[in-house]
Structures are given as C-alpha cells and as structure tokens.
Length: 461
Ligand code: PEP
Ligand code: MN
Image (cartoon, rainbow, N blue to C red; front, side, top):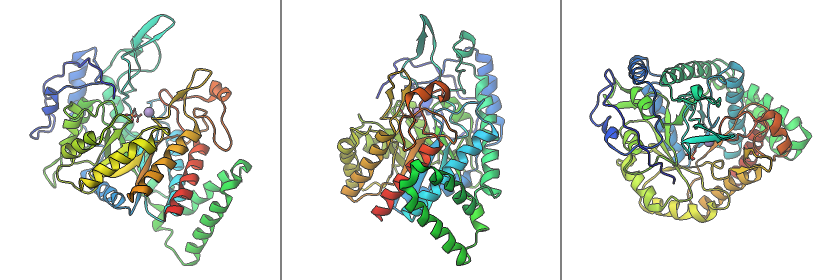
C-alpha cells in the first residue's frame, strides 16, 4: 500500500453540518490523498452549500442494501458492482448513463441465471468523481502540473488553470450525481428494466459470430424466460429493479458534508451514496478514512491488495464492523491474476476462523493493469478472467462463498482493455480510448465476462 506522506491541514468542523459525536474525529488523524484547495473562501462556501442540500440517497434505501448484502455474505445473493474508473461531468449524458445501466442489467440477467441467485445491482456511479493517485504531479514534455484527481477536484486538461484544486467542483459533483441518480431511478423503476427487454438486448451479443461459444447458455436463458412467460410469471413486477449507487469515499470533506442524521433512528448516514468503499491507498487502520467510515451506518467496502495481511483484515473488521453486523462489511480483493491463488487463501481462512462474516467480492481489474507497447494503460481480458477464476477456486477450496464482482466497465464501444472473443488490439486505442483514468471493459467485453462468470457460477451450484 502506498502512503503519501503529504498530509494537508484540514479545517475545523463545518458550520451547518449535521452533528453527531465522533463525526469529526478524522480531522485529528493522519489523512492521505486529500485535495489542497486553492481558495479557502470557495472551500468554505461550497461545504456550507453541500451541508444544506438534500440527501442524494435515503437512509431506508441504505438499510435495504445492507440487508441484501447480508444475504450475499450468507451465499444467498451475488453482488454485481460496475462502472467507470472515474466518472466525468461531461460524461454524465443520458446516452452514456443509460448504456451503462443497460449493460449492468444485461450482465445481471445472465448472472442471475448462472448463479440461480438474486443479483444485487450496483453502479460505480453517481459519485465516483475522486481518484487517489500514486503521484501528486504529472510531467509532460518537461512541464509539471498537479495530477488529475477526478472531476470533483480538478479537470483532466493539462493546463495550470484546470489542474488547480477547485472546491466549487464539490458542488458540481453533487449536482451531477443528483441528475445521474435521477435518470437511474427513472430507468430502473419506469419500465426500462423489463426482464424481457433486457433479455432481448442480450440477443445482440450472441448474434455476433465471435460469441458463438456462449450460444447454448443464451438458449437456456431464452427457454427459461419463455417458461416463466408460459407459467404466467408477473412480468409487470419484473419491470422494476433495485439499483444502488456506490463510489470510493475519498474526499472526506464531501462525505462529511453529505452525512445526515436519520430521523427514524437518530444515527448518521453518509447520504452521498448507498455503498461507500475505502480504497487500497487509504485503508490505514489508524487513518482518517477508516475512522470516518466506521461512524456512518452505510454498508462499507474495503479494497484489499496483494500486500494486505490477515492481521490487517482482522483489524479492519474490528474497527469497521465491531458488532459483526451482517451486510456491514465487504472485502473487495484486487490481488492480480498472478497473486490471487496464493494471497487470498490466508486472508479468507483467518477471517473465517475469527468467526466474522464478511462479503467477499473480487475486483479483477486493479491488480492487472499494464502498459501496452504503444503506451496506453490497459488490462488483458484474459488476466481479468483469470483473476475471477482464481477467486472462485480459492473460495471453492475453502468452502466459502465468492459473493460478487466489482468491475470497471462501460456500456460504450470503447477500446481500453485488450482481448475478448471479438478482440480489441492496441491499434484501436488510438481512436477509441476514452477513459481519463483506468481502462474499462467495453459493452461486449462486459457481457462476455458475465457469460463466463455465469458458466462458473452454474458449475458451482
Ligand atoms: C479504483 O477502484 O478505481 C481504485 C483506485 O482502486 P484501488 O483502491 O483498489 O486501487
Ligand atoms: Mn480504477
């Protein structure tokens, strides 16, 4: 785990923010990966504005999600979490949002069939606007500027103006999240998620001759849908799906300002999203991120990379889930295809032996990032698949449940990851590489992933 030594001074508790004992304790702890805002007045007024705006999600929805994740931790549901590495303000268009939601729904249908289990659908969406970076700066042609830290902090264009840390972006991140969520809610409640429609979209995938090997599974799903129809299944009810929003809780001022006291329970919820995770670079046990998230009621994820020890995992459980509450804690492992079979077993074994019940999810993306010969940050589809396979093998060997997957994906026809049955090669990057951060599986690669994982899940059951 890389720790940036630079820790910026943080201000005193924000006037107007919801009060609850301990919510500002993080301000006295070491904190990494925070912006250094250029204008303190804009900073103060942006946080005051955020503190007064309505919550983006409701505490009751957050509780529903915790219950769903508890089911997954028990092996009775599977989590599918996916979306951009970094959402952008410009990318929050109806077309792009709907393509992403649609792809997640399409993947979920395939996985539901494969697992014979409910699939919890969750976007890395409506808040995924801040990025941890391994270096504070970026140098291009001898010019050094602050690194891009996500649209919530600065812009991607390589100019001094854009790369400065501008706190008014916090408010724009909120409004962009609100309109993204609004569209997601409309789609998933308004008929767009009709099972028959989603199934019909999947036919486009199998119509491609490159995907012929998935035909038999696709046919089985088709028969299952017809069977349901013949039995008089209530497809009206299946027009609505639950869809949850998640992001990395990185910029703590933003998360703090959106934390509200739930009127039903009197407890604090971070209403910036349903599910929040702590990244590989900010999971220090005595650090600010772990402290802050230990104090809100949302279900919490923690990324665990290849340097994680079983002791780290146990200490995170004690701090983040002292009550051992089902659904509260998810470990998202991102070991790399070459490491997973060796590094994951001791973690799962010791956590299981401790009696704690966490949800284990694979992130097969972040341990498999490479640079293509022509200089793009990329991932090989085969490595991604291999990490997922390793994750399933490890859990099978230990008798534990592989509870979900966390993907960087998009609904668009981009070229960012190499390979797949209808392969992307590096020449395609020149025209179709759009990510401002990590490479995502494109629409077809995402569906292929779902078909492959569905095959593995069905063998398991
Ligand atoms: C991410 O999810 O985009 C990310 C930065 O992951 P990690 O913290 O696992 O490196
Ligand atoms: Mn990423």
